[in-house]
Amino acid sequence: MIQIEKTEIHGWETAIRGMRNSWESWAKSDSGWCMGDSDPDLCAGCKWLEANFGYCTHPALLKEEIDGQFCVGEEDFALMVKLANAGPDHGKFLRMITVTADILAPLYWWKEFDTYKVGTVANSCSTMHKIHAKEFTLDDFSHEHLRDEAAETLKTIIRALNCCREMHTETGRKEDWWQMIQLLPSSYNQRRTVMLNYAVLRNIHKARKSHKLDEWREFCAWAETLPYGKELIAGNNRTPPPNDHLTLDELQDMEFGDWVWVQALNLASDADIVTGYYRKMDGYRPEDAFYFGYPEWAQYADYGKTWTTYRRKPKEDTHGMD
Image 1 (spheres, rainbow, N blue to C red):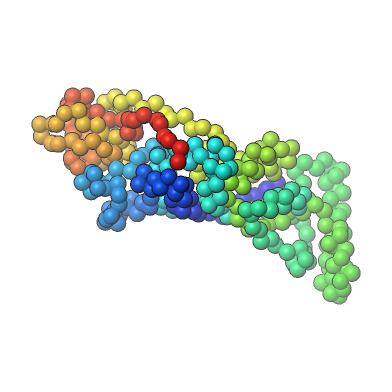
Image 2 (cartoon, rainbow, N blue to C red):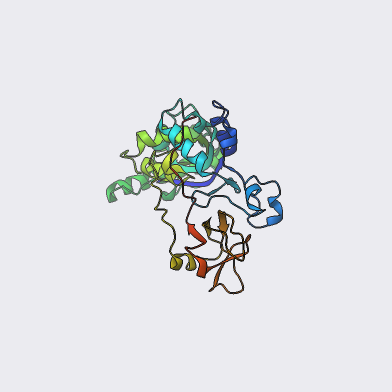
Protein backbone atom coordinates (compact mmCIF):
# COMPACT_ATOMS: atom_id res chain seq x y z
CA MET A 1 0.00 0.00 0.00
CA ILE A 2 0.99 3.60 -0.46
CA GLN A 3 -0.58 6.83 0.76
CA ILE A 4 0.44 10.24 -0.61
CA GLU A 5 -0.85 13.40 1.03
CA LYS A 6 -0.05 17.04 1.80
CA THR A 7 1.18 17.64 -1.76
CA GLU A 8 2.55 21.10 -2.56
CA ILE A 9 3.98 22.40 -5.85
CA HIS A 10 6.29 25.41 -6.17
CA GLY A 11 8.47 27.14 -8.74
CA TRP A 12 6.20 27.68 -11.75
CA GLU A 13 7.05 31.35 -12.15
CA THR A 14 10.80 30.74 -11.88
CA ALA A 15 10.71 27.74 -14.22
CA ILE A 16 8.81 29.62 -16.92
CA ARG A 17 11.07 32.67 -16.66
CA GLY A 18 14.17 30.49 -16.92
CA MET A 19 12.68 28.51 -19.79
CA ARG A 20 12.54 31.69 -21.87
CA ASN A 21 16.04 32.93 -21.00
CA SER A 22 17.84 31.31 -23.92
CA TRP A 23 16.02 33.45 -26.51
CA GLU A 24 15.17 36.31 -24.17
CA SER A 25 11.52 35.82 -25.04
CA TRP A 26 10.10 36.90 -21.69
CA ALA A 27 7.71 39.31 -23.40
CA LYS A 28 5.93 36.33 -24.97
CA SER A 29 5.11 34.84 -21.57
CA ASP A 30 1.40 34.76 -20.80
CA SER A 31 1.53 33.31 -17.28
CA GLY A 32 1.31 35.17 -14.02
CA TRP A 33 -0.25 35.65 -10.63
CA CYS A 34 -4.01 36.08 -10.50
CA MET A 35 -5.29 37.92 -7.44
CA GLY A 36 -8.52 39.43 -8.68
CA ASP A 37 -10.86 36.46 -8.96
CA SER A 38 -12.51 37.20 -5.63
CA ASP A 39 -11.64 40.90 -5.35
CA PRO A 40 -11.43 42.92 -8.60
CA ASP A 41 -9.68 45.73 -6.70
CA LEU A 42 -6.57 43.53 -6.61
CA CYS A 43 -6.31 43.54 -10.42
CA ALA A 44 -4.36 46.81 -10.59
CA GLY A 45 -1.30 46.35 -12.76
CA CYS A 46 -2.37 43.03 -14.30
CA LYS A 47 -0.90 42.73 -17.79
CA TRP A 48 -4.04 41.08 -19.16
CA LEU A 49 -6.14 44.14 -18.37
CA GLU A 50 -4.30 46.66 -20.51
CA ALA A 51 -6.03 45.89 -23.80
CA ASN A 52 -9.47 45.28 -22.40
CA PHE A 53 -10.53 48.36 -20.44
CA GLY A 54 -9.88 46.92 -17.00
CA TYR A 55 -11.64 43.58 -17.45
CA CYS A 56 -9.88 40.24 -17.16
CA THR A 57 -8.82 38.74 -20.49
CA HIS A 58 -6.88 35.74 -19.19
CA PRO A 59 -7.49 32.68 -21.39
CA ALA A 60 -9.98 30.24 -19.95
CA LEU A 61 -8.94 27.05 -21.74
CA LEU A 62 -5.72 26.33 -19.90
CA LYS A 63 -6.23 28.56 -16.87
CA GLU A 64 -5.37 26.42 -13.87
CA GLU A 65 -4.65 27.84 -10.43
CA ILE A 66 -1.27 26.69 -9.18
CA ASP A 67 0.49 27.63 -5.95
CA GLY A 68 -2.92 28.96 -4.96
CA GLN A 69 -2.97 31.85 -7.43
CA PHE A 70 -0.52 31.23 -10.31
CA CYS A 71 -1.95 30.75 -13.79
CA VAL A 72 -0.06 29.11 -16.67
CA GLY A 73 -0.98 30.67 -20.01
CA GLU A 74 -1.55 28.92 -23.31
CA GLU A 75 1.66 30.13 -24.98
CA ASP A 76 3.88 29.17 -22.04
CA PHE A 77 2.15 25.80 -21.68
CA ALA A 78 2.63 24.94 -25.37
CA LEU A 79 6.33 25.80 -25.16
CA MET A 80 6.75 23.81 -21.94
CA VAL A 81 5.29 20.69 -23.56
CA LYS A 82 7.45 21.10 -26.65
CA LEU A 83 10.67 21.52 -24.68
CA ALA A 84 9.85 18.71 -22.24
CA ASN A 85 9.23 16.31 -25.12
CA ALA A 86 12.50 17.39 -26.81
CA GLY A 87 14.56 15.74 -24.08
CA PRO A 88 16.19 16.49 -20.72
CA ASP A 89 18.52 19.18 -22.09
CA HIS A 90 15.70 21.30 -23.50
CA GLY A 91 13.41 20.34 -20.63
CA LYS A 92 15.72 21.24 -17.77
CA PHE A 93 13.21 23.87 -16.62
CA LEU A 94 11.26 20.90 -15.19
CA ARG A 95 13.90 20.63 -12.46
CA MET A 96 12.77 24.01 -11.12
CA ILE A 97 9.18 22.85 -10.49
CA THR A 98 9.44 21.27 -7.06
CA VAL A 99 6.96 18.92 -5.42
CA THR A 100 6.78 18.08 -1.73
CA ALA A 101 4.54 15.42 -0.20
CA ASP A 102 4.15 13.05 2.74
CA ILE A 103 4.36 9.42 1.63
CA LEU A 104 3.51 6.36 3.72
CA ALA A 105 4.84 3.23 2.05
CA PRO A 106 6.46 -0.13 2.92
CA LEU A 107 10.19 -0.47 3.34
CA TYR A 108 10.44 -2.72 0.28
CA TRP A 109 9.16 0.20 -1.83
CA TRP A 110 11.39 2.78 -0.15
CA LYS A 111 14.37 0.54 -0.95
CA GLU A 112 13.65 1.04 -4.67
CA PHE A 113 12.74 4.73 -4.27
CA ASP A 114 16.18 5.34 -2.74
CA THR A 115 17.81 4.56 -6.09
CA TYR A 116 16.71 8.07 -7.13
CA LYS A 117 19.38 10.16 -5.43
CA VAL A 118 19.63 13.19 -7.73
CA GLY A 119 16.89 15.78 -7.33
CA THR A 120 15.27 14.17 -4.30
CA VAL A 121 15.35 14.89 -0.56
CA ALA A 122 13.60 12.87 2.15
CA ASN A 123 13.10 13.12 5.90
CA SER A 124 11.79 9.89 7.40
CA CYS A 125 10.27 8.75 10.63
CA SER A 126 13.13 7.06 12.46
CA THR A 127 12.99 3.33 13.20
CA MET A 128 16.21 3.80 15.17
CA HIS A 129 14.65 6.18 17.70
CA LYS A 130 10.91 5.48 17.53
CA ILE A 131 10.50 1.80 16.68
CA HIS A 132 9.43 1.07 20.26
CA ALA A 133 7.20 4.15 20.68
CA LYS A 134 3.91 2.34 20.03
CA GLU A 135 2.53 -1.15 19.92
CA PHE A 136 2.80 -2.88 16.54
CA THR A 137 -0.49 -3.65 14.77
CA LEU A 138 -1.34 -5.38 11.51
CA ASP A 139 -2.16 -2.02 9.91
CA ASP A 140 1.47 -0.95 10.39
CA PHE A 141 2.36 -3.36 7.58
CA SER A 142 1.40 -3.73 3.91
CA HIS A 143 -0.41 -7.04 3.80
CA GLU A 144 -3.14 -6.67 1.15
CA HIS A 145 -1.74 -9.50 -1.02
CA LEU A 146 -1.03 -12.01 1.74
CA ARG A 147 -2.85 -15.33 1.73
CA ASP A 148 -4.40 -16.50 4.98
CA GLU A 149 -1.46 -18.65 6.03
CA ALA A 150 1.03 -15.86 5.24
CA ALA A 151 -1.11 -13.36 7.16
CA GLU A 152 -0.99 -15.65 10.20
CA THR A 153 2.80 -15.75 9.93
CA LEU A 154 2.91 -11.95 9.90
CA LYS A 155 0.67 -11.84 12.98
CA THR A 156 3.08 -14.19 14.76
CA ILE A 157 5.97 -11.84 13.91
CA ILE A 158 3.95 -8.89 15.20
CA ARG A 159 3.38 -10.67 18.51
CA ALA A 160 7.12 -11.35 18.76
CA LEU A 161 7.89 -7.69 18.00
CA ASN A 162 5.49 -6.54 20.71
CA CYS A 163 7.05 -8.94 23.19
CA CYS A 164 10.50 -7.49 22.46
CA ARG A 165 9.06 -3.99 22.68
CA GLU A 166 7.59 -4.62 26.12
CA MET A 167 10.90 -5.97 27.38
CA HIS A 168 12.80 -3.01 25.96
CA THR A 169 10.30 -0.57 27.47
CA GLU A 170 10.70 -2.20 30.89
CA THR A 171 14.47 -2.75 30.90
CA GLY A 172 15.88 -0.38 28.27
CA ARG A 173 18.26 -3.14 27.17
CA LYS A 174 19.78 -2.62 23.73
CA GLU A 175 19.63 -6.36 23.14
CA ASP A 176 15.83 -6.20 23.08
CA TRP A 177 16.00 -3.21 20.73
CA TRP A 178 18.16 -5.25 18.35
CA GLN A 179 15.48 -7.95 18.23
CA MET A 180 12.96 -5.45 16.88
CA ILE A 181 15.39 -3.92 14.38
CA GLN A 182 16.47 -7.23 12.86
CA LEU A 183 13.07 -8.90 13.03
CA LEU A 184 11.16 -6.00 11.41
CA PRO A 185 9.72 -7.15 8.03
CA SER A 186 10.24 -5.11 4.87
CA SER A 187 6.45 -4.74 4.65
CA TYR A 188 6.60 -2.27 7.56
CA ASN A 189 5.11 1.08 6.47
CA GLN A 190 7.35 4.10 6.96
CA ARG A 191 6.37 7.75 6.54
CA ARG A 192 8.69 10.19 4.81
CA THR A 193 8.36 13.80 3.74
CA VAL A 194 9.94 14.00 0.31
CA MET A 195 10.94 16.72 -2.14
CA LEU A 196 11.12 15.93 -5.85
CA ASN A 197 10.81 17.87 -9.08
CA TYR A 198 8.98 17.41 -12.36
CA ALA A 199 12.12 16.17 -14.14
CA VAL A 200 12.64 13.39 -11.58
CA LEU A 201 8.95 12.50 -11.70
CA ARG A 202 9.11 12.31 -15.50
CA ASN A 203 12.04 9.85 -15.28
CA ILE A 204 10.28 7.80 -12.60
CA HIS A 205 7.06 7.69 -14.58
CA LYS A 206 8.82 6.47 -17.71
CA ALA A 207 10.59 3.67 -15.85
CA ARG A 208 7.96 2.62 -13.30
CA LYS A 209 4.49 3.22 -14.77
CA SER A 210 4.07 -0.50 -15.59
CA HIS A 211 6.01 -1.87 -12.63
CA LYS A 212 4.84 -5.07 -10.96
CA LEU A 213 4.57 -3.31 -7.59
CA ASP A 214 1.18 -1.71 -7.01
CA GLU A 215 2.91 1.09 -5.12
CA TRP A 216 4.83 2.23 -8.19
CA ARG A 217 1.79 2.20 -10.44
CA GLU A 218 -0.18 4.19 -7.85
CA PHE A 219 2.73 6.61 -7.45
CA CYS A 220 2.83 7.22 -11.21
CA ALA A 221 -0.95 7.69 -11.28
CA TRP A 222 -0.58 10.31 -8.53
CA ALA A 223 2.13 12.09 -10.55
CA GLU A 224 -0.29 12.39 -13.46
CA THR A 225 -2.80 14.18 -11.22
CA LEU A 226 -0.35 17.02 -10.51
CA PRO A 227 -0.93 20.25 -12.48
CA TYR A 228 -0.22 19.46 -16.14
CA GLY A 229 1.16 16.09 -15.02
CA LYS A 230 -0.25 14.20 -17.99
CA GLU A 231 1.67 16.41 -20.40
CA LEU A 232 4.85 17.40 -18.53
CA ILE A 233 5.38 14.17 -16.54
CA ALA A 234 3.63 11.40 -18.47
CA GLY A 235 4.44 12.96 -21.85
CA ASN A 236 0.90 12.69 -23.17
CA ASN A 237 -0.02 15.28 -25.76
CA ARG A 238 -3.14 17.24 -24.99
CA THR A 239 -5.61 17.34 -27.87
CA PRO A 240 -7.31 20.73 -27.81
CA PRO A 241 -11.09 20.45 -27.87
CA PRO A 242 -12.90 21.72 -30.98
CA ASN A 243 -13.16 25.49 -31.11
CA ASP A 244 -16.02 26.10 -33.51
CA HIS A 245 -17.99 29.21 -32.73
CA LEU A 246 -20.71 28.63 -30.15
CA THR A 247 -24.29 28.35 -31.22
CA LEU A 248 -26.74 30.75 -29.60
CA ASP A 249 -28.22 27.89 -27.55
CA GLU A 250 -24.77 26.85 -26.32
CA LEU A 251 -23.97 30.42 -25.31
CA GLN A 252 -27.26 30.90 -23.47
CA ASP A 253 -26.77 27.60 -21.62
CA MET A 254 -23.43 28.74 -20.18
CA GLU A 255 -23.26 29.21 -16.43
CA PHE A 256 -22.69 32.64 -14.92
CA GLY A 257 -18.96 33.07 -14.38
CA ASP A 258 -17.93 30.92 -17.39
CA TRP A 259 -15.28 32.35 -19.70
CA VAL A 260 -15.83 32.90 -23.41
CA TRP A 261 -14.00 34.60 -26.27
CA VAL A 262 -16.19 37.36 -27.74
CA GLN A 263 -15.35 38.17 -31.34
CA ALA A 264 -16.59 41.48 -32.78
CA LEU A 265 -17.81 41.16 -36.36
CA ASN A 266 -19.01 44.74 -36.81
CA LEU A 267 -19.71 47.65 -34.54
CA ALA A 268 -23.09 47.24 -32.90
CA SER A 269 -25.43 50.18 -33.17
CA ASP A 270 -25.81 50.59 -29.41
CA ALA A 271 -22.46 49.43 -28.03
CA ASP A 272 -18.89 48.97 -29.20
CA ILE A 273 -18.11 45.27 -28.75
CA VAL A 274 -14.42 44.85 -27.98
CA THR A 275 -12.95 41.48 -28.93
CA GLY A 276 -11.47 39.58 -25.98
CA TYR A 277 -12.04 37.10 -23.18
CA TYR A 278 -15.02 37.83 -20.95
CA ARG A 279 -16.85 36.18 -18.13
CA LYS A 280 -20.58 35.72 -18.40
CA MET A 281 -22.28 37.98 -15.85
CA ASP A 282 -25.76 38.13 -14.43
CA GLY A 283 -27.84 40.89 -15.96
CA TYR A 284 -31.19 42.64 -15.98
CA ARG A 285 -32.68 40.59 -18.84
CA PRO A 286 -30.37 37.59 -19.38
CA GLU A 287 -32.84 36.01 -21.78
CA ASP A 288 -32.32 38.91 -24.23
CA ALA A 289 -28.67 39.86 -23.86
CA PHE A 290 -25.25 38.50 -22.93
CA TYR A 291 -23.81 40.47 -20.00
CA PHE A 292 -20.03 40.38 -19.65
CA GLY A 293 -18.59 43.64 -18.35
CA TYR A 294 -17.34 46.12 -20.95
CA PRO A 295 -19.26 46.52 -23.13
CA GLU A 296 -21.84 45.73 -20.52
CA TRP A 297 -24.00 43.60 -22.78
CA ALA A 298 -24.60 42.41 -26.33
CA GLN A 299 -28.03 41.65 -27.77
CA TYR A 300 -28.73 38.04 -28.66
CA ALA A 301 -30.73 39.39 -31.59
CA ASP A 302 -27.42 40.59 -33.11
CA TYR A 303 -25.61 37.28 -32.53
CA GLY A 304 -23.88 36.14 -35.70
CA LYS A 305 -24.29 39.60 -37.24
CA THR A 306 -22.20 41.97 -35.14
CA TRP A 307 -20.64 39.51 -32.72
CA THR A 308 -20.01 35.81 -32.11
CA THR A 309 -18.27 33.70 -29.45
CA TYR A 310 -15.77 30.86 -29.08
CA ARG A 311 -14.72 28.79 -26.08
CA ARG A 312 -11.19 30.13 -26.56
CA LYS A 313 -9.38 32.58 -28.78
CA PRO A 314 -9.31 31.26 -32.36
CA LYS A 315 -5.76 31.15 -33.64
CA GLU A 316 -3.21 28.88 -35.24
CA ASP A 317 -1.57 26.25 -32.98
CA THR A 318 2.06 27.00 -33.89
CA HIS A 319 4.80 27.71 -31.39
CA GLY A 320 8.51 28.11 -32.01
CA MET A 321 11.01 26.35 -29.80
CA ASP A 322 12.91 28.74 -27.55
